[in-house]
Length: 332
Ligand code: TRP
Image 1 (cartoon, protein in one colour):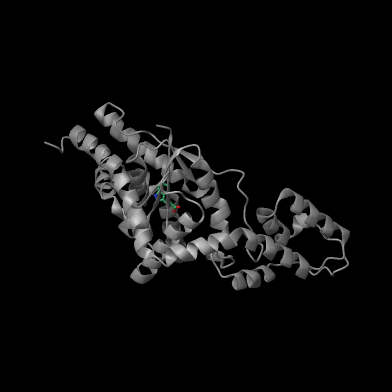
Image 2 (tube, rainbow, N blue to C red):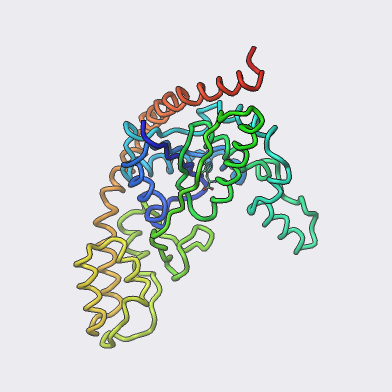
């Protein structure tokens, strides 16, 4: 068996091209070299999403999205966190090894406490135990599968370090390596995808291009990307153009060089550059969109893929839990 890469995808928003280039594509590339386990962290999402219909839709979209983007469920174990009940048993066990002080230091939790302080509100306002214990649930996700590396964005490295700390505390107590100590693998060199307004593309800025929008909408959004006020004849600097940065993600190196030359020569207006962007984006995204629509049209088939993934995951997770029950004295 090769090394294990595991990551969770929190279904809290519509997938956009920032997710695609920043997380989905790199994770799928990594799956060529590792035994990959990718799952939908639906209980993590429940923390912030209390509308059942909406959460359900997001879970389906994210699952269909990863499959449409090329995740091969024969090679990657692909499942829903909620279909692997050992996750929640392990989380309960890990609670007994995770110090409260450790969790007090979690950035996400601390940020809310701090915001409460700035507003003069009670420090605990709006904080549920799901937020406070988020790192423990995440540690359970990771430690259940003897994970070597956890591909994540920079914002999640602290959580992976906490998982390593908690594994260390448990191993120390039982004086052997019952749990593998994982490492974060931070995606570097992945492009920062600019949003329509030029800031980083992010759901919270409302500046996204959804990955699976219709062709018509894609075109409309490409036309909305910010530009400066330079006229058609003026030479333009491709490196300062959000349109060009986005184009770079979709174009071949030759196409990139050709468009850069047209920018520098002058005589090309922003409208034309936007058309080029749309053409390149649609070329890459239309086969994904077609696969996505086909998957979303057959939810029972999607459900079957996820259930098969969960069965494979549980073959591993039940062994981990059996090992821990024995070591801890819980098993008779
Ligand atoms: N917390 C991660 C995020 O917000 C999602 C996640 C849940 C995760 N469990 C995980 C990531 C386990 C890696 C490993 O993006």
